[in-house]
Image 1 (cartoon, helix red, strand yellow):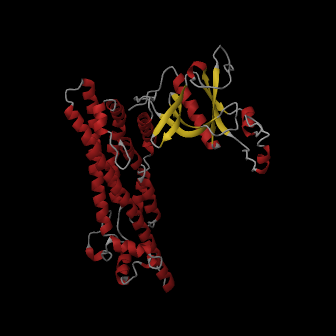
Image 2: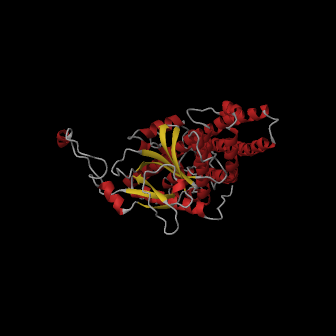
Image 3: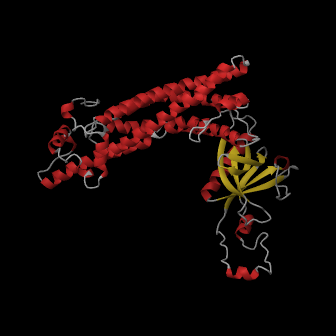
Length: 454
C-alpha cells in the first residue's frame, strides 16, 4: 500500500454513496456499527490489512468492541473530511466569484481607459500581478478539491489522505508568499482608483452584501484554517495507521508559523482600506506603511461625569494616529475626532479617577425633590468594584476635542497635554489597548521610522 491510495476495488469497503454514508453515520444506534450492517465479512477483510494495529484477544466481546472502535474513528475521520470538502467548495466558489466579477470589471475599466497616465498604468500592473497569483490559487485549489473528492468516493478504514494534503501544502506555499508580497501595492492602487467616479461606478458592487475588501481577506484567512481540520484527522487516526505520520507532519506544516506575522500585517493593511471606504472624510488615507492595530467600541469617559457609560465610541488605533467615531450603521462610520500620537503618552487610568468612576456620588447625578420619591422605590443602580481603561495624554494642538484638564503633565518644557480617557470592558482589553498605544506612540516618535517591507 505504501503512501498511495488503494485503487484495487477488491480490497475496498463496499461502495456506498456519500449520502448513504452520512445517513448511516447520523443515526446514534448504527454509527458505531456502520461497517457491520450487512457487511461484516467485507469489514474483516479490510481489517486484515491493518491487523498490526492491535492485538486481538480470544475474548469475543473484546473483539467486537475493537471492531466498533475502528468503525467509530473511521466515521470521525470521514466527518472531518466532509467538513473539509464543504469548506473547500465554498473557498473555490469565493475565488471564482472574485475573478469573474471584480477582476473582470477592473480589466474592462482599464481596457476603456488605455490612454491613462503612466501612474495609472503602473497601478494596473500592480493589480494584474495579484490577479495572476489569484488565478493560480484557484487552479491549485480546484485540483485539490477534485483529488479530495476522489479519495472520499473510495473511503475505507485503510484509505490515505495525508499525501493529498502534503501535496497541497507544497503547491500553495509559494503562491501565498506571492500573494502577501503583492497585496500591499494592490490595496494602495485600488484605493487610488476608487477616487475615479468611472471606476467606482463599474467596480463598486457587492456580492451577498460583500464588497471587494471582503474577498481580498479570504485567501489570508483560508491558509490558516486547514490546520484545524487536520488536527481532527490526527485525533481520529490510530498511531500505527500508515496515514498517521503524514497527517502529523501536515499539522505542523499547515500552522504556517513562519507566516503568522505577515498574515496579520496584511490583514491590518486591508483594514485601512476598509475603514477608508466606510468613513466619510477619513483622515487615515491608505499608504504602504499605515496599519490598523486595534478597533473596538469603548466608552469615552466624561471627566465631569465619570460614572456615565453612555458615550460609546468606535475607537480605531492606527500605527500613527487614534480616531474615534460613531457607528451610524453596519457599514458606515462618522468621524468624531482624531488624536495625533506625536509626543503623546499612554497609561492606565489613575487610581483617583478610577475611584470616581466607581463612586455613585460622582458626576452630575443630582437628587431632585420631584423625583426623590420615585427613586426610593426604584432599584438602585449597581456600580462596578473595578474599572479598566486607558488614559491618552496628547499635546494640546494635537487634540481636536477635549473637556479635560488644562494641566501640564510634561516633566519638562511648556508642553500642555490634554487627557482623553477610554473605558475598557475588561483587564485584557485594557492591556491590549495600552500595549498597542505605547507601540504606536513609539513608532511615531522614533526619528527613523520602521518601514514595513511589502
